[in-house]
Length: 305
Image (cartoon, rainbow, N blue to C red; front, side, top):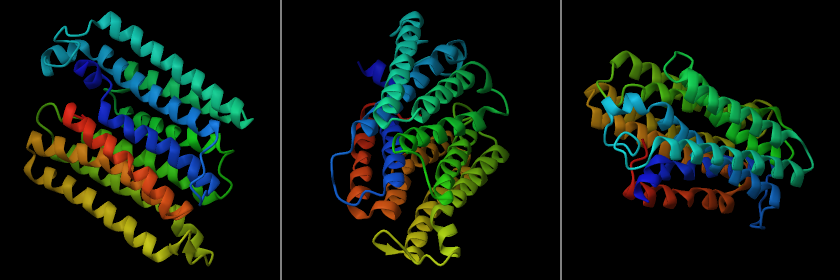
């Protein structure tokens, strides 16, 4: 069981759920803790299935490389056979597609199904073709942005232009994490780490446009707090993530790089919660950040990277 949990990157599943749930909440702007509709839960289920599928199929495609660089992983070690992993990965992908279509049916709009189809294609392109190329981080970032769109479209889609800054920014942020983690199995290059950290910073700035753009039109409050206070909170989150990345850049130690990558991935949940704070207030922000419990418990069982 631990081998399967390691294969699907158990801790990171909480970040996938946080994205789609936050996407739904940002669009609806729910303030009271009412039970979300079926479309929301279908979108979350699709996110979980797609993420797990992408992780399993990633290792299926990388098995020969992992025999050299990560022989302790479940597939190269023989704990799980490659054929079985491939069947499970494809099955999870199909479950994600069905759940996305169910979200579309429940929301009475085709967009969740289309987001699911785009996510399926992006996962396949990344695992099969783009991973080792210069386009790899961008494709992985697109997967994260589409995961946000699953939740947003299940709620009917964003109306405000500023809301589209969130999937764009979070996509760029995750592209930066992917670039930063490119050589984590071996000796990381300082230039690649710097480029990854800068990309993460750009993504965080873009996502902040969700609040910053309305401020330019005279909006002074978001949900239950001043917009300036929200920007300060977002800035503190960004700085703490980038400081950890800076420490890894300085040391170049593999453990420091992996720690910075894990911290940046874990930060996705907190960032999602802060975005929900701007749209819905403290109650739903606390619900989203409670997913951190799943990440931390999962991290004690298997590594997130």
